[in-house]
Length: 342
Ligand SMILES: [Fe+2]
Image 1 (tube, helix red, strand yellow):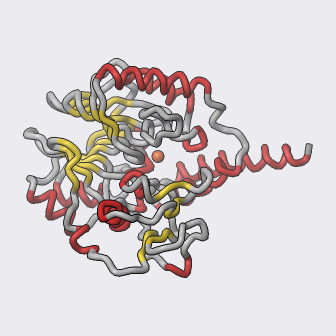
Image 2 (cartoon, helix red, strand yellow):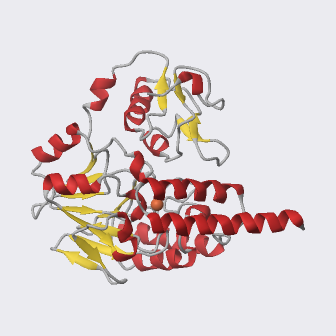
Image 3 (cartoon, helix red, strand yellow):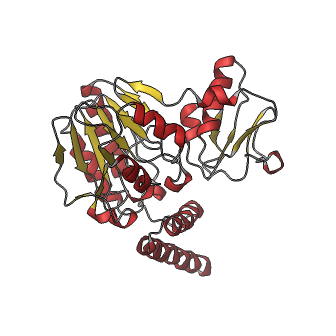
């Protein structure tokens, strides 16, 4: 439950507020972009405009019920129960946003893909009865695709409950060491006629994306749509690339060879376009990545993000990942100290 006494000072006054527990996952600004937004590129989001219309209130309440930390609150009473009952939300034929993002995946979105060969889940939401019952009513799960080590949440509990096979890359296996299917190397792996797992190292070493029916591309944390540059396909900023910006840029290049019309990121907004336009957007994105600064500058933002990831790695039992991320953080601190001594 969000605490009005801990409401962030940057919220505009009124009914809705975000409190200091926000982890900056951006899910609220994806669901209600008119209402929630970042503060000067900072690590958290706030209410930038109070909802005015019925539709805006509704979207803000959807953001409230899906917030992984329960950081969004209201000062007035609303019918939250009926908003909860709307979930999952249909994205397109056979694809649903499950809602109820987990803080164990840093607030990543999770999706359900209905398929005659067995249903898939992408990433994992909170492990809760409502979601379990809904998935059960659709015939359960055969596979759980995990794009990378940050976003697995309680995938193990879902796998156990539905006897589903988890898919993750070898290089991110520490996050889900008991995964039933481990992707190796950089070649794509097909699962029946409708699913293709494409290794896309960069954000993390073992990052992968999932292509469904040459239509939906689940892009994990590699690509998003935040309109930072006025173009619909972009990466997260370089400070949020944990492993290699250069490899990530190369991985984006690989995607030009595939067809898709709906881009579905784990953090960020969904983007729909023609196949040709998607390729054009990818090319623009690559140009920008090549022009962006190096991923490892000494910056307060990079330090905050890395410190957050050290804690996230520890909380999710990834000891080696925590050690490696801590080393990157120490290196930045050293670089900063040198800079200040100059
Ligand atoms: Fe990530």
